[in-house]
Length: 354
Ligand SMILES: Nc1ncnc2c1ncn2[C@@H]1O[C@H](COP(=O)(O)OP(=O)(O)OP(=O)(O)O)[C@@H](O)[C@H]1O
Ligand SMILES: [Mg+2]
Image (cartoon, rainbow, N blue to C red; front, top):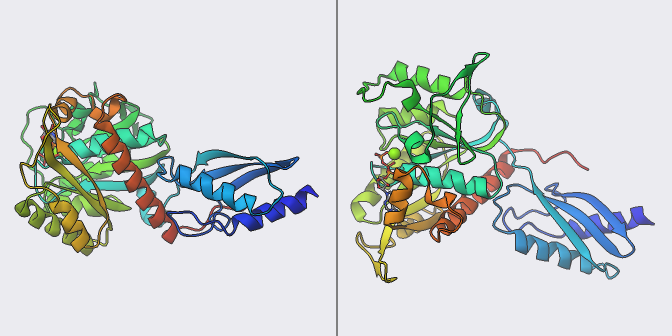
């Protein structure tokens, strides 16, 4: 009797599509632990990211899908997440890391590192395990922005990343003496990066955010090739000159066969204390560029002293749950995670059946 009902449930759910992945929930192997008691159904939905922006919609679709059966009374849904990973041989060079994604920009100073740290903290707040790799050869400043103290130590030949705000982090800066100007040459970058990836004990993390150097020069090119990336988030300011740089950045990733996950517009507008918006660099340019280039637009971040102070004090704005601007990063990170899930689905075999 119950087996028959479970079969009916699975059949009903095989007609319910995930709103983001556009396949049914049974094919995606997202349904677990189905229990029928009297006419009530309990089940677990395994999301492809804890930062899923579609929880409510999925709950509604599953509930409605089961009520179609006629006999179902209460539907109790427990949600968990299992971030899927690209299991191609390239990712073997980053053991324990499910998805590495770069934050890049066509030019310097547009807020790449600010976006990197806040994206990492936001993904962690959503429930994901996250690391940051500060690969900016010109000015590695992630440890400062995250408020990380001390130097990493080596245990049994593996470098232990530092941890701050629940995020594991490693930086090229740890390998340089403070204040020493660095002349990076190709082999040096290669060696240092290899150490920062394969020799680091990342543990098991869902997302590794890689803060790339600005621009499309040799350093960015080498780094983007050395780390197996699932994709890149490109940061831009709104004005036209910055957008030209974005286009350059995007064509660099195209040449490297790295997908651009989307564009973030930083310093989008200035939010005055009285609530007025001042559009210092114009506004909406990145959104237009994203549309033109047929790339997802991930969101706009205002120019705000509290964002800068967050970076300077080692407390990214998103680490403060009360800070209103943190919501912007929560939203951007959910979009990034959803885009990664869709990409993984294209590449990866479904999870084993129940
Ligand atoms: N939205 C914002 N509002 C206010 N200040 C910001 C914002 N975004 C970035 N900043 C500040 O601008 C400066 C540059 O930002 P950040 O270091 O993140 O840029 P970057 O692109 O990583 O620079 P670089 O190319 O030098 O690595 C920092 O002082 C940062 O705090
Ligand atoms: Mg930076």
